[in-house]
Image 1 (cartoon, rainbow, N blue to C red):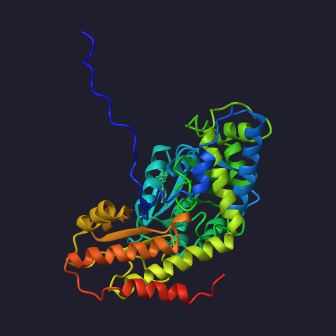
Image 2 (tube, rainbow, N blue to C red):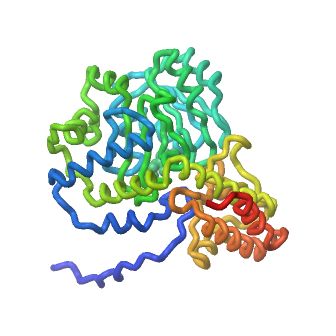
Image 3 (cartoon, protein in one colour):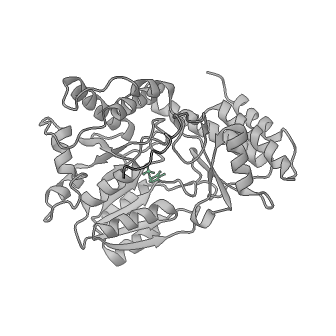
Length: 400
Ligand SMILES: *Cc1c(COP(=O)(O)O)cnc(C)c1O
């Protein structure tokens, strides 16, 4: 019997959203346009030129001269796997700093690669001190130390430079998760002596999910070259990928051509604005949002002095219904924000101001929508205060 015919699903018609969550973030219109350009072959001379340009721009954004800087096919987690699977051989020791979801994920990935994993933990919303890491290194002598720079689950900003010093003093390699930080705050790969770093296209780079920028230092490449065992992942083997991204142009897997157009244009947009201006814009919008939220009694979940500009994790006021507010934001205002994960489930909202999304109109729209919904929840505050407080921050800036 042939299968009974099923009705065809409805035509595709995605709703228009304002993406102010933990990612994906708003796509820059130029990126959208670039991605709709025609597809060419993955060995087409034009595509090879674009790959070279992409690498050059990634080096600028990562602030590195690392030759081995390119984009892995896949999302940020593919970047994470690529970094770990290439550096780790079975039974190698890896120390991982866990203060949120993504450090935990890195530990899972490392375990699957056969690493002997040691985890040190900090409460959610807090960061690690160099002394803490130094002590763990002394006890464990890891080959690789993994740390998340911008913990998207908590909104905490981990300083990297001082950690790098203790890792290198002990002869280890430093692996940094820059998925949420890249394009929103400085990630100084060379100055901070990061050995391996990965990011994602859909956070502060204003691009859809699908590519993971990565960079490996010459030291990391030496370690990879002197491996005794093959990299467990064929797809993510950096030595093989190097033969495609490098001058040999040996076919490995088909590059996601249109995603590459998108990331290329996204990097153009970032560099055209200028890195310093991009970072300042993220900071300003976050300060305005914070002033607005504080003015109506909403405080931040991450420790003072260590709060990320692009991911604002705030405590949900007592008595306010988390799910009701978030679903009304989405259904009545078209605004997506993130709920809490893990230890922050039901306790925090995560408001992303990432890349193209980090704009005054988004901050003011979000605050006014939130005020309306909080009022229906019986939460007491001064109506209009948050928008005024945010505006005061913007007005305090010299225009230009
Ligand atoms: C989003 C994110 C990831 C995972 O990236 P995907 O694109 O979801 O695979 C990893 N680390 C951090 C810090 C992130 O914010």
